[in-house]
Every structure is written in structure tokens, then in C-alpha cells.
Image (cartoon, rainbow, N blue to C red; front, side):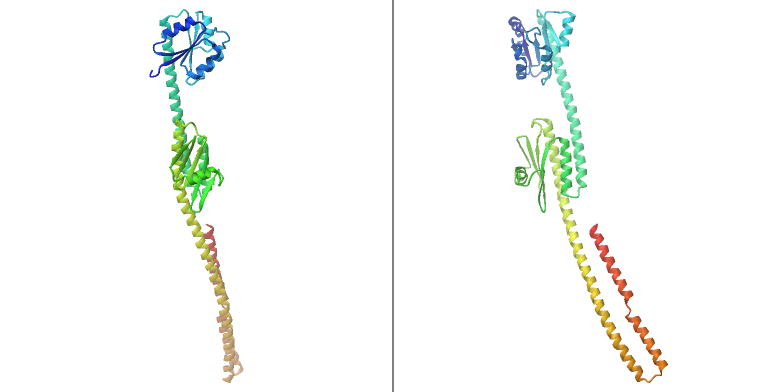
Amino acid sequence: MPDQIKVLLVEHEEQDIALLEQMLRNGYIVSSLDDSSNIIKRAATIHPDIAIINPTMQGLPTKILCSKLKSLQPPCHVLFLSSDNSTESCARAYAHGADDYLLKPFNPIEVHEKIQVSVQNIETQKKLIKASDTARTAIENSFELGTIITFMEAIGGCEDFDELSVAFFKAIEDFEVNLSLQIRASDGALNFRCANDSLEAVILGEFKGNAKIIEHANKIVIHHDKISVLLKDLPPCDSMKYGRLKDHTNIMVNSAGARIISLDLQLELTERKEQDIEQILEKAEKIKNLFKTTYTEHQKTTNTRITAFEQQMESIFISLSLDYQQEELLLKSMHSLLSEFSDSTTLQRMMNKNLDELLSNMNQLQGD
């Protein structure tokens, strides 16, 4: 192994400690204790790979001790010292949590062989832990990539910046970190999960030009022209998860920034469209009112002229000295003609209907 194996000896017999230290002085880093009360404290400090313990030491809770040693990272292998080679003694050692035992008096060959077996077990265990960590990392990475894909699909359907922020927070929840967010739209900055006058808002807004990614005190700030995020409560910065979260969040920030640009333009075009339609509706309403006014004036003028024409024609008929029947027939024909000429109710109804349909269609377009 590239690293030397660390061995912790716990024995109250000085002669046994000296003998074991001599046997293990080549190839191992050996620490020894003759007091059982400090075992856990010493183990937590030096992180031994193997602990060789005399279970008969006074006041030594072997089961609890073995459990605590095996809970260390990496776990510690435990060998008991014993002068009893009986089946009951061996069974008792294993029941208390020992991985193996060494018999007194010590046989150097047996000691080295059993230490080597423990070393092989340690290597195997480390490989299993590494394989487990690799598999877990792959699963977590796959899950996080799935979250990113879901996020990208979600922001594509966002209609406004509130919906986009909700999609961002929902994705970040899968990463198990806290987030503050600032979106910079054309009409100003929008802060989410931080007050406008808070330190987070200042960090997100004022320092965006300093660097794309700023890391400090277990926090990350990632900037884009249109969006900045502040990640908090992150895992240790030397962990693989920390690096993945930073990279994955950076991808999400860039995607969200591109969506903000398109969404900003979309909202601007929608607002401009609504303004244009509103202006057209106002003009159409004015045209309708002007038509009604003009039509009314035209109707009055037409009626006045028809009345004057009727009076003039009656005078002409009288001057022609026609008999009563001829005069009555001509007057009746003239009144019928003028009545049809002056009756433009159908025309008015048709014009009003067309104008109303135009206004209705424009209102529907505005609603869409």
C-alpha cells in the first residue's frame, strides 16, 4: 500500500507492548496505550487502521469500544490479545466485535500473518467503499442531470419571470441547498428569496461584473448578464458534490439567462402589441362616432332639401293647370320616389353592423 498501516496497541503489560512494537517496527506506524480510558480519544486523533487490544484490561467495555472503532472513517480493524485458545474464548471475541485475535505468547510469524490478513481486509474494504462512493456519485450525478433537463424543459414554457424563478427554486430543492436569486429584466431587477435592501441583493446586483463565479465561506455566487444566484448551505468545498453543484448550477444559470433575454423580448413585443391594438380601437371608435355624426347631419340636410323640393314641385304642378286627377297622380309618384330616396335606414343599419363587427374583432384580437 502507498500509505503505511497505522497500528494502535492497547495493553497494560509493558513487556507485551515492547515485544509487539519490536515485531511491527518495520512497515507499520505503531502507537501504544496502557490506559483503556483514552482509547477512543487517541483513535479519533490518529485514525488507526488496526487496533490490537487486550480485552481483559480493567474497566474496558469491549463491545462499545469495538463499535466505536468500527464507526470511524475509515473503519478500524480490531484484534484481541488472548492467552486462551479455547472455542469459547474465540467465540466470545467475535461476539464482542473483534475481527481476529492474537495468542500469547506471541509467535512473530502468526502476528505478521494476521496483520497481513487485516491489511488485505482493509484494502478490500477501502475498494468496496470507493466502489460504493463511485456508484453513489454516478447515481447522484444522473439524478442531478435529470433535474437540469427537467428545468430546461420547464423554463421553455414560462410565461413570466415569476414562473421562471419558481422553476429555478424547484430544481435547486433537488440539490438540497438554499438559494437567493436576482433577475435583471429590461424594466428593472427582481429579487427572489431576499429583500431588495438585503446584503444578498447587494451581492447579487452590485458585484456581477467582478467575476462569473465567486466562491467564499461555503457560498457560491454565479453571475450572468441577466441573472445572478447565491448558493448557501453547500457541502464541503473539497467534496465531489460541491463541484457538481457548482457546475450544474452554472449550466442552469446560463440557460435561464438565455430564456430571460427571449422572455424579456416576448413581453416587450406583447406590451407593444397591446398598445398598438388599443390605439387602433380608439381610432375605430372615433371613426364610428364621426360616421354617426356625419350621417345624422347628412340626414338632416337631405330631409330639408327634399321638403323644399316638394314645395317647389307643388307650385310648378299648380302653375301647369293640371286637372285634379293628374296633379294627384304626379304628386303621389313624386312623394313615393322621394320617400325611397330619403329612407336610408337599411344603409345605416348595414354600416353600423360592419363597424360593430370591426370593433368586436379588434377587441377579440386584444384579448388573445
